[in-house]
Image 1 (tube, one colour):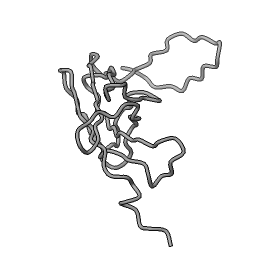
Image 2: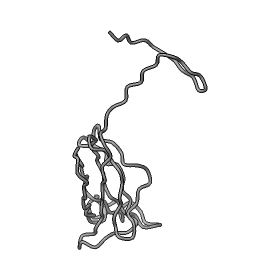
Image 3: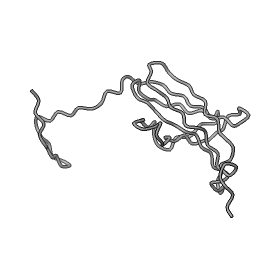
Length: 133
C-alpha cells in the first residue's frame, strides 16, 4: 500500500525513495496548422496562440511564440492523448487592436494520426467592436 507524505526538496539537494507520477500524454503526433485570409490565401507570419475560454479548459499548449512560415503554415509536435486549443491572429506593426484579425478558436482533440487544420482569419476586430464615442 502506497503512503503519501510531504517531502520538500530544495535546489541542489537529493532525496531517496521519491516517486514522481507524471500524466501520460501518449506518443508524439504531428500537428500542422495553416492560416488563411477570407479569400483562402496563406497568411505568412500569423501568430498561433493558445485559445482561452470555456472550451479550452484543460487544453495543453503547443509552445510559445509560434508563427506561420512563408507558406502560412506551422508544423508542431503534440501528443496523442492531449487536447489543444489554438487561435491565429495577425496585427501589422504599428496597427491598433481595431485593425487586428483573428480566427475562431480551434479545438484539436486526442488522436493517433497526424492532423492538419486550417485557421481562417475573420474581419478586422474594429468592424466587430462598438465605435468609440
